[in-house]
Length: 262
Ligand SMILES: Cc1cc2nc3c(=O)[nH]c(=O)nc-3n(C[C@H](O)[C@H](O)[C@H](O)COP(=O)(O)OP(=O)(O)OC[C@H]3O[C@@H](n4cnc5c(N)ncnc54)[C@H](O)[C@@H]3O)c2cc1C
Image (cartoon, rainbow, N blue to C red; front, side, top):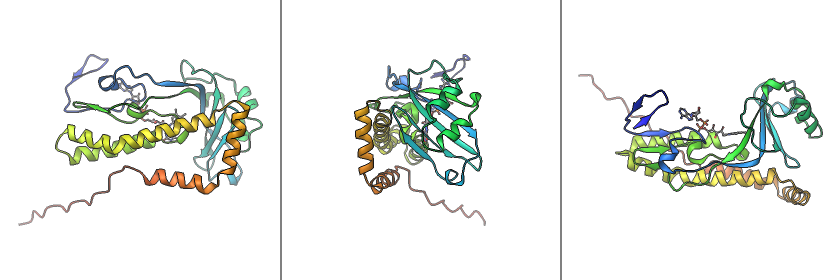
């Protein structure tokens, strides 16, 4: 039975908890799981900015001193920007905890297009949130209840994969429910296909976060040297491998409509 805040309740055949990293439905499957917070915050904005041609077709990522910033063009004059900064998670995400002047000052020495993008920000388009993930869960379902997306594998954003993994969940879950006779076997298939991959990417994102946010000068020098020495082909191989290991169901051939002519 699912009860809602307005007093109504339902008794569905199955309940899919796609209710985010602070999932309430998750409590039915794994009670007491608390998201783990990093001592870092993230600013995000979509801003209108006139950038040189070179920055209008590809995204950037820059690892700094305890900060990690970057973004990607959305269209001819809009840019999605993010930047992390050391600090405790804010109580809410409704406004910047820092002034725009402080942000401009902090990112002034970063390579372009960051200073230009930060220079174009309006205070009311910047919002700030904490950085959190959840530990790997033992299982994603219990009886007729299953969780998906951030509820099941909320991850740090450093691999840029949280929403992508939630979409893979949705496709795999629908496919399993379609192909299996009942929820128990469908949820088993869903978990077998999705959990190892989502958990692996969650851990990968955590490790990338540790690298991106490192603050000690020795750590930063070691990280930068290692990245310089690693050939670009290794990075590209790593990304291709992640895409190739997708657990998406094979597309099915649509069945021909039955011939009902007599
Ligand atoms: C800084 C940052 C950058 C990111 N960058 C990327 C990226 O580049 N690429 C990428 O793929 N992902 C990225 N992500 C991750 C992505 O945003 C999430 O993984 C994704 O939104 C998860 O989708 P979801 O549907 O599982 O959960 P959510 O998007 O959190 O949706 C859950 C929904 O459930 C609702 N809800 C919760 N509780 C209840 C309730 N009790 N009753 C009714 N409704 C409820 C919420 O209001 C919400 O609408 C980023 C995340 C962050 C924080």
